[in-house]
Length: 216
Image (cartoon, rainbow, N blue to C red; front, side, top):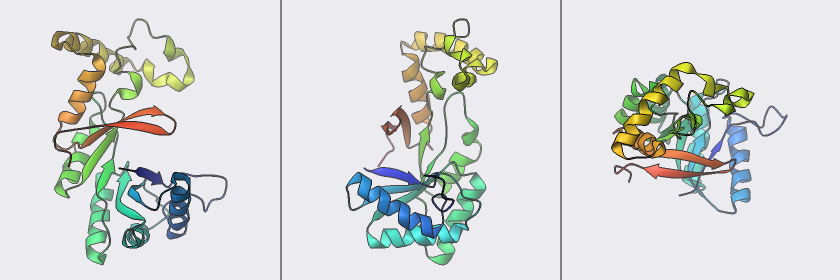
């Protein structure tokens, strides 16, 4: 399955970003050319665009689905209210609806359990979560008493005392279960019935996917 996103700025031109019809039409052609393909299996909005009405976005994406350039559409980092609005607009106007949502989720970041996951389940959406290893905190290589990376500004999250304390409590649990910390973290993430897949970033332009048994 080939999945990619649109919406992030690609330069200084203010028109080369967001979720407007104008940019979606341009962005998908750019992606098809770069990926050397005639269709994208899953085309995702990177994040909500407050400057564009969701009906305009869904209308443009619907045209891409009908033309065969896109097989399914999804969104990312959308609040529960935004998920509901998008589904309601799609139903009311006969437009393609978002099939997937991509939020952050891990043992250390469980906020989506409150509203995002139940809402996605209600609408039959697949949930492709990212960050299951807590931005490195759940790899077993970051510990409270020997954390050299925390000195660097880009690793500032590694100095969060509350999360470091949680990691210290998880380490013996992983050892008791006979699992590496990474396996424990991934198992927790995909065990939730509302989670379809967990995405692991491998580099600036690639990722791997671990799916729950419910994936179809």
